[in-house]
Image 1 (spheres, rainbow, N blue to C red):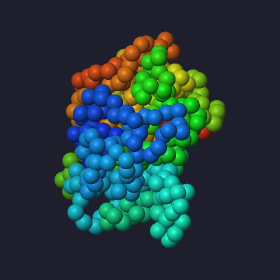
Image 2 (tube, helix red, strand yellow):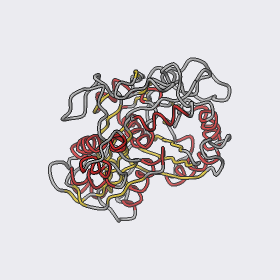
Image 3 (tube, rainbow, N blue to C red):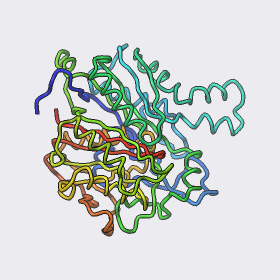
Image 4 (cartoon, rainbow, N blue to C red):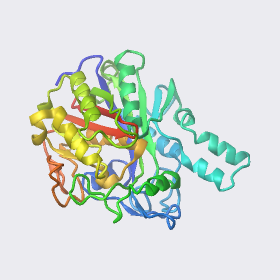
Length: 400
């Protein structure tokens, strides 16, 4: 595949999940099909039906500058800064002030809100709340990393960081930006844990089995990732190494229900079709799909129907997996983390499995890469995400 001067290239990334920090955790956790779910220790879950999440504890590499502690809720700011620094270093852009935009998908750092309700009403508590607002995080992270440029937060739930990535690509493709640090973040905390628990969305046995007949629901997980995006012309000029190309993206709305997907996956199919069109890619040209794959009774059949609708006959021949079977649902961080997973698959020719898969469901009749990773020639990856409110997004990544 040839690269044009205006192509959008990914040149670096950093990652933190329930498996830990960095590429080693990515390889030994997500791509090995090892779930990171464990009983939550960082806050009291005794009042909840659910007890498990893929929350980083004492296993795996911690965030740089911190020590492993299963009882501590990390801050999004420190996690985003650590992942952003790793991404910039990988891209060869670390070590000093840089003109770069910072776009982050996040609902904010809920540790500040939790501190406020626990009595932190003094000046320090109010500052903590202010600094945990979604709009504050791009400012704070940009300052931490000495990045100057536009700063923007995306807050549209589970497609937030996918949309941040798409907007970053648009800025570069249109010539309005030369370097963008695009990121997404969610860290397991009590507020959203309580909301999903009260909605009876959690799997009751501490495991997530997307697309399997006996699936019970989702579990939350830590997920923070940052990616450096640049135009191909700049990468060539400075002698950088491209890792992947962002060649297509699409958005669409179901306009169906506040929290249930369209049963036939109409909106997600439309987003996939738009992404393929922008990438000038035929359905049979997709070598792997990283599915949204939450493991709920309603999402998985709808997503299966969407892939059939968008990919046609090629859907049955295309490997698909849900890495939320190992990471949990990372909410606003999902799109950024799963984009990094797509880049890793492109670079190493490995397809991550759907862990915990036990029994086929006639309504979910695709190749789910059950339980074990698979080697393959990977040239083009499709990643899908969906959110409450009928939001749908898809991106296409290619080998540069």
